[in-house]
Image: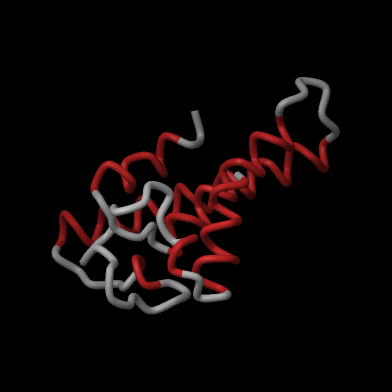
Length: 114
């Protein structure tokens, strides 16, 4: 969750290139990937206690739904040839970023609900 927040708000929000990639010398993490990672982490944080209140569980499910939606949207782009620009939401790519979200990243979104 922390990595997602740092990459999204520090890297993309403040446009600090060094914070856009987790491993120096690799391509940047997409903003949509960073936000989905932060959302999945928030879901785990909200739902880690089996006795969590109904409100916390609802918040956790809502947070888990976002990476699912991002992953499924990209998979539909990949399989159907659409260009929904999911990989450029909410920030446009700059130099040093990959052309598209990696397929293994997109497959991780639907797995976040397990």
